[in-house]
Amino acid sequence: MSAPYDDNNIFAKVLRGEIPCKKVYEDDHTLAFEDIHPQAPVHTLVIPKGKYVSLRDFAATGSDAELAAFVRAIGKVAALKELEGQGFRIIANTGVDGGQEVPHLHVHVFGGRRLGRMLAQN
Image (cartoon, rainbow, N blue to C red; front, side, top):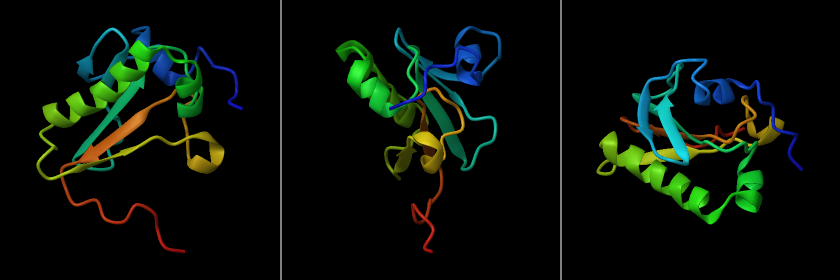
């Protein structure tokens, strides 16, 4: 079970306009913007505008319109960033063990170079 939504998380502040962002795409249900600490030449975040902590929370309680808009937004970001030809990676970290740092659902869209292995070999 996810922790309760925190209205003071950084992405909630971005959505309220309290923190600026470099917008890539926006529709009624989603916002996509550049990551402030990019890990690849293209590193864009896609977030729902609703108060969802995790992908599980979103999948269980998001409306059909929100779910469809979120998936479409990821595709639109890939197209806007011209990633479709060479490929790209999406990652949604969930929870402490998954590496989630901000308790608002977000997908990282990475591209612009060969990204290598997904997980380090231990």
